[in-house]
Length: 282
Length: 294
Image (tube, one colour):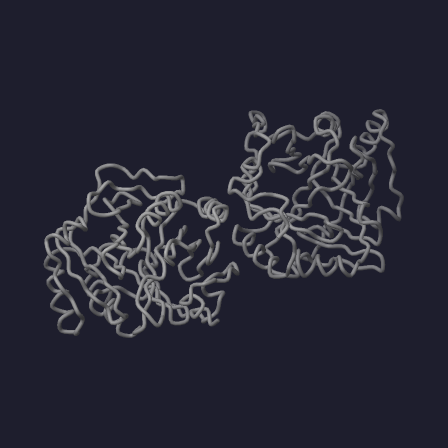
């Protein structure tokens, strides 16, 4: 079994790096960790980077997870290869671009680009936000799924993810105590559905709601509260139509042995207990 | 020497009720139950509503053009002393008739008019209900919590509230003055204005969830949100202020701070962020817009 320890980073192609930088610093509030001619590395916590925009196609989106060591990485490559997922082994240049010791790349059954990385870099300097959004760190991703039941099996049987709750057939899955690290979202093609950053408090969610509204950033869902994880949230649009989320108060699964996934109906109140409706840009 | 121990306690016990002047009682009554979620109290004479353990906290007043608020006074002796003090200070006050008391479910009342022209009813022994509060909708209301009053004679109105009635100024935002007479940050807020009347009637709710659920609930019913969801820096309360019938403004609030023993009145600048730290802007409440320097 492939043992995912945590999320590591997201890599997004950007058609206009300046635009991406403006959004990431002025709106989202991340810190620029490093900037090269073709890449923008952004920090959200004590890691050297958790989001990288690179010059390229906005449809080119990758999510990376950390694994324990190079032995586990090699075992994962063998497992994936045996299951028929072509595996790319990262070379030195690619590793350096990702600030990791080693990595492999593959596609999940839907076709999402996934990387497994060993020893992603931390930064000695503490995180210093570019605006006071209250971000405490990169926390989870939503992944498009063309077949949620099949993809749930991949993440839970091939990898070590556990289902925390389900909304209809959509699984919210964890790899550690945090309620979910990967959320599947029904979609017709591969891609990242949303990128979540945790913020300090409920106040931060609402402050950002007014700040972003004032900056004319399209709010696509919220402010709201997920009955599943208990998190208060705000979803909004970034470059390339990527959806970003701020949230606070994600529950932790206290007892790994006894937790049973709850089943929520596939209806609006399962996504927001306050009554916010998704998909209404305003 | 501890000054607090030597000062006489405020004779004010609690904010009891609001009597809201309305021209059309039925739409207002429907709003009180269907939107605010209050519990109607069967009564032959008036439209009464509960919001907590008290017999009533809202009365829709159709006979008069002016609204009033009720404040409980500790006892008869205190009310007597207040009557005397009000007379000396030149404030209009009149003892309520037996019928007026009966209509208010109190055992005695003194009707006072402040310098602005707001009617304040100082009452004795307001009725509690033996039965628990059962709301009309699940709005999470925990009780009538505070009232915003207009003031066009701020100094004289403050003199009435503090020197005579014994309330204390908790904080000021611009010239908005938050007044307390129990452990909560404020029960009355005075807003500079050019006329008399109530700015808003605020009900406490049990959680942030209740505030946000009502935010979407009222919007789905085409009820205009006038301010919020927001958070008031002085009092800490999270609020939602929305439009009721005939221009009356209602508010839900959660998280009103308790006042600390070492509290000292603070002056907040006359800016929107002094009224809402999240960044919501007030619409269509002139007193709040004035207070935020707009």
